[in-house]
Length: 212
Image 1: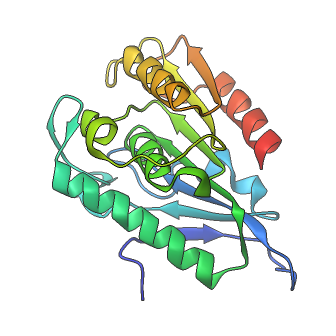
Image 2 (image 1 turned 60 degrees about the horizontal axis):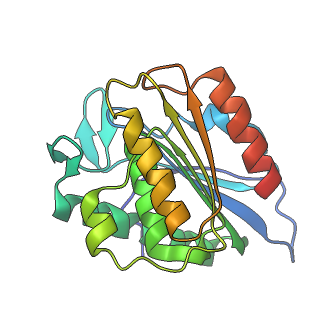
């Protein structure tokens, strides 16, 4: 079955037989595309499978994963479909490629961070690590999703203290929610807006290289 989501794949030039590799599934922010976040991890392509996913909804000049009905409130049915689409992609790619099922990572910025955390709560310890850059967890995900055991799930959550798009408090609430569920969380705040600063990138890479 073909995945409903378009993605760009980076992988080792020579895939060794009888070897499995970690996989990183990347999700961009609203109005962007699958090329946006690749510079943060492209150099890992010799040792990992990197799937950079394009949102299925047109949002000029790029794409989106879901639509919004209010501040911090995604349209529920569209969001649920996005979560299931990413899970389907993870399942299909894990079957098609020599991926180590114990080393699956999710990474996203803004909408991608929101989706990464929601997928992580849905799949639980199937995911080894999540990097959520400037996102939040929708209330209906906290209250109505059947969240799985995440005690072995490691998280890197970062947020700009002057973010005018998604309030800084929402990032703090996300880390508190995951910690309440027993997951180890590394939280970083930066004196920037809705963006990934150089310092943020450096800290994220340290976390990723330690966990991957």
